[in-house]
Each structure stands twice: as structure tokens, then as C-alpha cells.
Picture 1: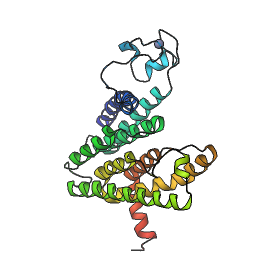
Picture 2: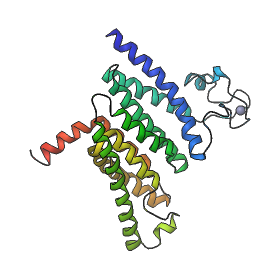
Picture 3: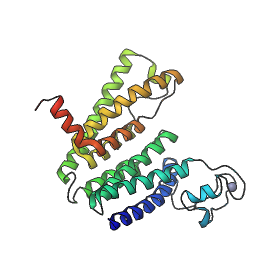
Picture 4: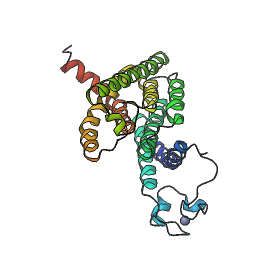
Length: 268
Ligand SMILES: [Zn+2]
């Protein structure tokens, strides 16, 4: 029991540091900037962040969310993303113990979180998350438990093709039913290429069933939340966020969903 607490604590601390790096990636990758150079600096005065001001969550609290040099306020996104990542890593290692599945799950949810952050800010899903994550997911499928490498490969191709077809069909449908609507919101198609590559990553980690539940859950949330907000504000809301949420739910409760579907819908 003591061992479980220690594993969880170390995973949580690791998650905090990964969350800190994830913030940097999610802000710099969409702008094609290096995540290594320059080192962390204040966007206000440009001064480098001292190592003791760069401790996840604690530094932000100690500085009360302001730069030590120029007093500019530092976004709450930094401590919140660090905390979220720390909780995700702690939670998975608490649930699965010190196993490959815990690491696989934590990496997958971290990638999804990074995608949601980038998409929310820039309407861009960096290839480093989607394509890099696809390679990572396929590689990790060779580990015991979870999806097999074959299921992972089928998930990648199946996910890519499915969402690509939905995108083509959606574009055709919108042009037919609401001519000029796409031009109104400044896009040339219903789905971005980033979303399609992202679903391939989801397929790599979850297989084809995970792709199906992710698209289904993502669409339900998107229609309930995205529809009204988009209609009111006439702004596009990035679909990647909903797909990320759908994929996180699919990973966490996918087996329960499958059982429920079989017993209540298929009646088998
Ligand atoms: Zn500053």
C-alpha cells in the first residue's frame, strides 16, 4: 500500500513537470517555434525565468501570478495545465500501478490535452502531437495489454479514412444546404486536416472501436455545446477540443460503454 502511494506521488510530480513542458509545446509548436530555444522567458519584459520561478504551480502561487521583473500577469493556464497533467499522471498510476498501461494511458491523455490547448488558442493541431502521437501509440501497442499492434494499425487507417470521408461528405452537405456558409466563417471545408490526423492518433492508441466512440461522443458534445455557441457568436469553435474530450472518455470508460451498448442496444 505504501508503495502505491509512492508510485502515485512520483507520477504526480513527473506529471507536473510534463504539464509545464506541455504548456510550452502547445504555445510554440503551432507557431513553428523551437520548444528548447529560447528558454522560458516573460512575454512582457523578455527576461529569462529563473529556475526557482519555474517550479510547477508553486512558483505561480508564490509570485501571485505576476512576473518578478515587470509585474505583468501570468496566465492561469500555466498552473492549471500543470495541475491537470499532474492529476492525470497520478490518477493513472494510482489505478494501474507501476505498469506499461499506466504510462500508455498517461501519455495518451497528455497528448489529447496538448491538442486541446493548441486548438483552443490557435485553431491548429500541431503535427508533433498528432503524427508524433500516432507513431508513439503504434510503438506502445507492442507492450502487453491494451490494443495489439494490429488493432492499432487498423485504428490508424480506419480513423483517418472515416474522418476524412465525414469531412468530404460534410463539406458537400454544407455547400448544398447552406451555400456561402463556409466562406462566411473563412474556411474551405467542413473539417480541418489537423482533425483527421488527430483521429489517426486516437486510433493508434484505442483501435477502431475507440475511433467510433470518440467521433460519436465528440459529435454529441459538439452539437450540444458548439452548435448554440457558434450560432450566437458566429465564431468557429475548434472541433479538436471535442474530439479530445471524446477520446479521453473513450479511453477511460470505453469498455463500460461497449458493455452497455451490447446489453442495451444489441441485446446480446
Ligand atoms: Zn516580465
